[in-house]
Image 1: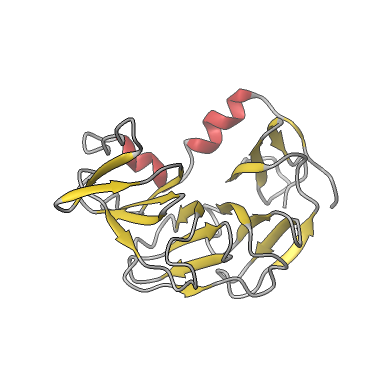
Image 2: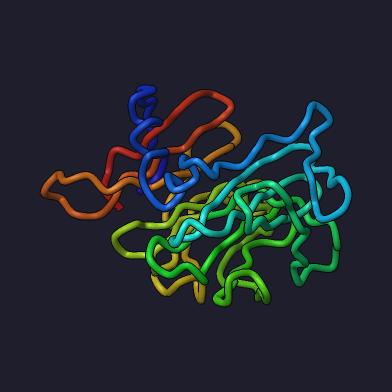
Length: 217
């Protein structure tokens, strides 16, 4: 399955973004946005986010994870305060490009980084471990979890080893399955649609617009 992406409509964006635990952020405890300098309250002071790339909400709606140019952050009070989260990377300020939460298990979250591959937590973010085996590159710009089969995820890798990779065992092993869409991937999302074919559709937000893989993975 190579170069199977086509331009999709804006309606698909609404469908994809409405899928999964992230919708829990739309309640009355939704996080306040950073100020114009890209910072928000963190403990007793201010925490600089710079570019915010990703936001994931755990399955129980209690914890938010924010991926930014300056690292990974966690909030347990609806975004009123954020605390930095250390990832097991050589660079203490790893650039977090994507984040996705398990749709049923509130303790499991995955994050993708610009220079260190994919990391996974199974204890709510207290500890993390690398989940990049099989990825030919460390620059991962997109990450999508299958809401019906949470052990299945897709990752968009840039530069070295560029392409779409799939894991069916929760990140233990990745396999390259597609060349991926044209243009730099900004967002990757998976959507289950009842087509009679099974599988999922992948939507990619890129520098060239929204693209969709027309085949079910």
